[in-house]
Length: 97
Image 1 (cartoon, rainbow, N blue to C red):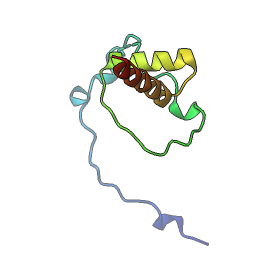
Image 2 (cartoon, one colour):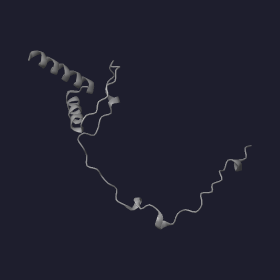
Image 3 (spheres, rainbow, N blue to C red):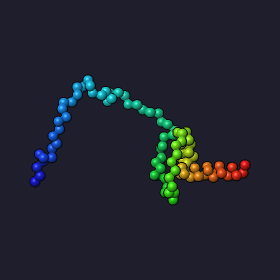
Image 4 (spheres, rainbow, N blue to C red):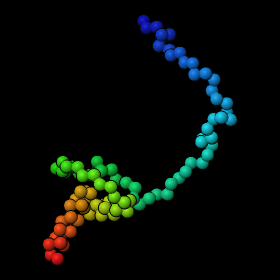
């Protein structure tokens, strides 16, 4: 049978700090942030799988992110599909002009 005494760690952490030196963060009120319209509410993994294999990373403003996601939610599209349709419409507009 194994000797449990060997498994105990010897800790020499010393005495805890005095109460007046401890952090007061547990006694302060919790901050509740207002909801923002551009926070992600739908996890991208919950969307359907596509055959898209190339990743495109962009940095956009929070307003642009919110607009793209709003359009995607309204039309039940993926973010990539919103971008693809917007680019197609933009290209068509340029060729007409």
